[in-house]
Length: 75
Length: 490
Image 1 (spheres, each protein chain N blue to C red):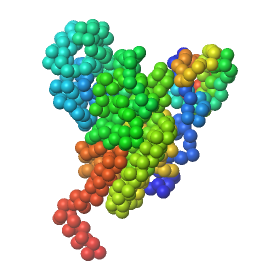
Image 2 (image 1 turned 180 degrees about the vertical axis):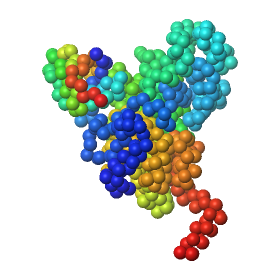
Image 3 (image 1 turned 120 degrees about the vertical axis):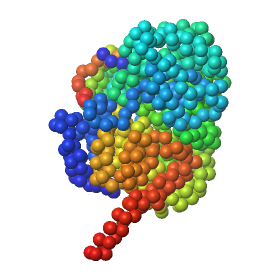
Image 4 (image 1 turned 45 degrees about the vertical axis):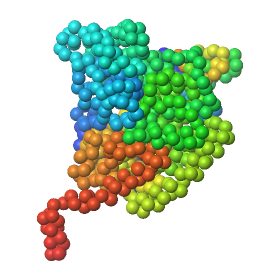
């Protein structure tokens, strides 16, 4: 489990940030994206994927959450 | 066009790596890349933020250098105690030329060295009591200090002193913030982790201090993050922002004060110059206080104009007009500077090896002068820095991460740049090789280089170094005669 931060970039897309590794990557897809249920599997542009527990869509980004690494795109 | 083609650069990298043992060669190969502008992410081509190889000469610093030297040190009205043996504080004292206004020793303290001067008995019995006494003494001798930060050196972590407890106790006693910073030098692989630790301690101990207190806001409040006022950089940046109608609430941390930092959560926009050392706090403020942040670049008129417009985008028409007004005002001045120096510098090749933001930020300034950057690299960057660098640099240029002394020399010998920009550790090596050199860490005791005013100085300095007659005099007269005689004979 790692603390990650999800924020919005200028173009409106979501950006994934892992402070411990200074890993910044755009989020290609998010499993659940509805007001009630948001989160699930995050697919990153660098090929990695992380899982965050689904929750109601946050009112404001950025948000720090705990995430679990699914696919290793790590160095 | 790059100085070498892609194949030639690849061959050069191979040749340079040849001297290393097998394992080292494999490791170092990952830290060198040839730029390809089409790449989106640097991840596949370059590895960064890894431990330096034992046995090579690296240019990196330590976590203490990143925290005390870079982030905490320049806050002028706080006293940063170098907690541990005396050397770390003394040899790093006033080295970064963070200019500030104030009376040193009365209300400002950047250039002074405060240390607990650890001795053997402090290592054996612990230094907590000494630290408490030291803070009491500081409070008595320098009552105008606004706060104290305790910058740990290696032994503090090794012997496990509880500086947090001392800090809490003393903060209550003197009624000022006392910030324990766990930036022991052995942490991490370079100064970069020190920046992170320092940012985290600012986040935990400074930022929330004035939460909920009344603050007279305006819609045009901004803060400058990551400008350390080297040679007056932050001042040259600040006047541009003020001229376009913004109110600069805080400077982090060059010529900055504790009060400014505490007021930063009230701004509308955080302007981030040194991404590497301050992005952490910008990200935190975005999450906690909803303040957007923006990277900008104040090196060279092209990039300044670009950045001013980008900043103005976040505000109303008044600021947008202000930005145009500022650009218009300085354009003739800048054109005069370029007209004067460009003919003298046109087509010259530059190699850079610095840290933080400069390996990518100054590229635009060199290009404004008609010069070309053929190689660049960072001491302590992470991959997100390289992502940003790829776009700035030309195709097939060389990019090196944590270059060793040997590699840098070999690259210079092969690529023959007309100018090198790096730090003091490299300066005299290249002087002796007869290559013009500028220190790009401290602007070679010149500056400022940021902003429009800075660009004029930058251009002058580059010309002064490159076209200095001394480079023609490196050969002794009798050696010269021999060469000429040979030429005649032939």
